[in-house]
Length: 116
Image 1: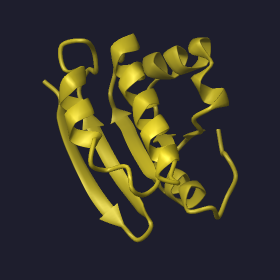
Image 2: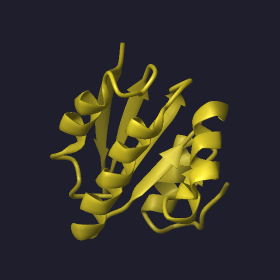
Image 3: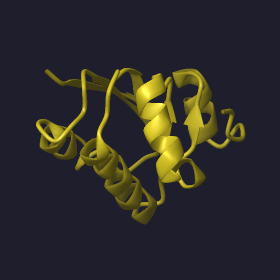
């Protein structure tokens, strides 16, 4: 089961994703983030043990929408299996990944460079 929550902070929105992210629930995430692209987004992936290419696709399309609105996507606290997916697909050359949510928020607000 996938659970989603978000917190609007000054200048950034943090989206917490919990559970495996795959073809069975990718539409749930896609629907959830459609209206959250007006500020930089930080995805807290600390509770996502597994992600397949369909979950990756949703994150990339979200990044495209965010960039059109002047924002960007930052990934935070990524678990080993999803991190490997990001690494082998080359996503990290386009979407920054950070060790913690707070580091990602700082970077999203333009106060620091990529930290991982």
